[in-house]
Length: 195
Ligand SMILES: [Zn+2]
Image (cartoon, rainbow, N blue to C red; front, side):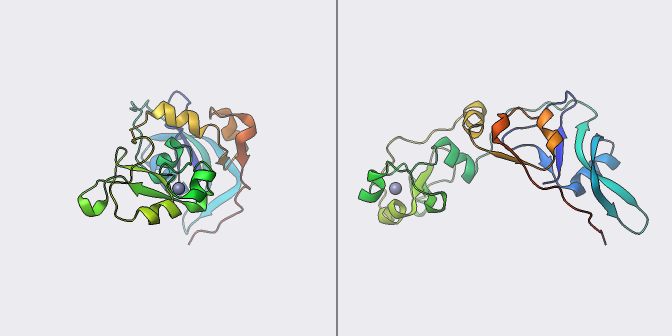
C-alpha cells in the first residue's frame, strides 16, 4: 500500500493493521477533501491525459475521526494471538517442537468443525500446524490446549509490535509508534505512467 493515513491528530488511524491505502484511494479522499497531503513522494508522479500529480506519501484527515479500537478477525491476527504456535500439538513431531513450526506449515483449525456447524470466529478458530490439522480430520474430540478467546486490540498490538513492519517511505517513521529496529523501509516506487 502506498499512502499512510493519519487522523487529524497526526497519529495513524490504526496500527494493526497500519492504516495505509492505495494511491487511488488517497487521491479520491483528496478530491473529496477528506484529507490533506502532508508529504508527497519525490519521484512518483501519476499522469493521465489531463492531469499530472505527485502521489501522496502521507495524508491527514481534515477532521478527527472517532475510531473504536475494533480488532478485525483475520488469519494473521489469530496467528498473532496464538504466538504462531500450533495449539493442538497432537503429533509427536509437533509436540517435540512445542508447536513452533514454520509459517508455511501453519493453518487454522476449527475447534467445532465447520461440518458440525462450527463458526469461523475468534472463539472457534485456533492456530494449528498442517500435520496436527490433518491428523485431527473431523474428529471434534481433539481440542486445543487452551480454548481460543477473543483478544483485545492492545493484546494484538503488543504482539504485533515485536515483529517487523514494512513501510513505503522513511518519513512514516515519525508518525508510527514502532520499535525503530523493526521498521523496514521498502524501496521507493519509481515513476509510474498511468493510462
Ligand atoms: Zn501441531
